[in-house]
Amino acid sequence: MTPVNALKKIQLFSSLSDRDCERLSQLLRLQTLHKGEVLFRRGDEGTTLYMILSGQIKISVSRRTNQMTLAILGGGEFLGEMALLDGHPRSADAIALEESFLYALNRKDFLSFLKTSEHAIPAVLSALSMRLRKTDNQLTEMCFLNVPARLEKKLVELIESRPADVKDDSDHVLTISQNELGHLVGVSRESINKALKSLRKKGILSTSRNTIRIHKLDLLKQRLR
Image 1 (cartoon, helix red, strand yellow):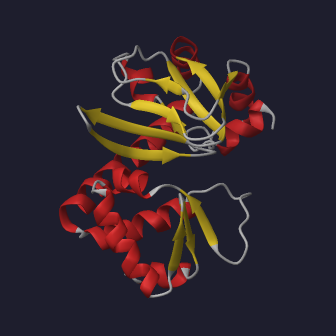
Image 2 (cartoon, one colour):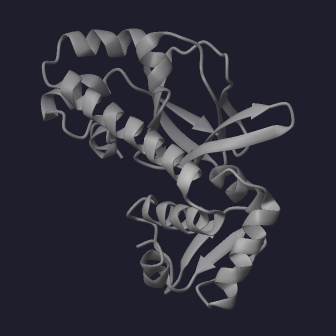
């Protein structure tokens, strides 16, 4: 995939003109992460925006022995934008869950680009606004939805957020541990196990080690209404 095509798949830059994408693509550098490799830690200096070409990056925060996963990002998504814009240290950890390929964009280059592109700033603000809305939705869910409902919504989100070129058989397969799923939903592994057991009994999904196979995605979506 060329840098220009990659930019057009990234929500943050998808509405930029071809000319702006071409200019911006010249500022990118390719970076590879192996499974388990740390991209950055909370408190690190924030000087780079990352755009994920393929793979998965986990964004999490931890305190003592407790950890909460804020998001699992995949191809077409971006991270590191907060520190890039305000220059403050990183607010979370970012770790590769599998081999991942990213484009990195330096803060200084990015800010210079914004100054010379009249269409870039509205596009960036729109994408950042959507990110804030998503955060608001997560807080609302934690306050008002019970554990089964939060789990079901998260499973649907994980399936629908995968790149379009990911192909399953007749089922939809997620490679994720129950412990990691608990971190995403904000509850214990035991609570996740109990909610999954209920869904297994209904024939909606089945589970094996670090794998969730959803047999009836439409039925799972209906339960969210």
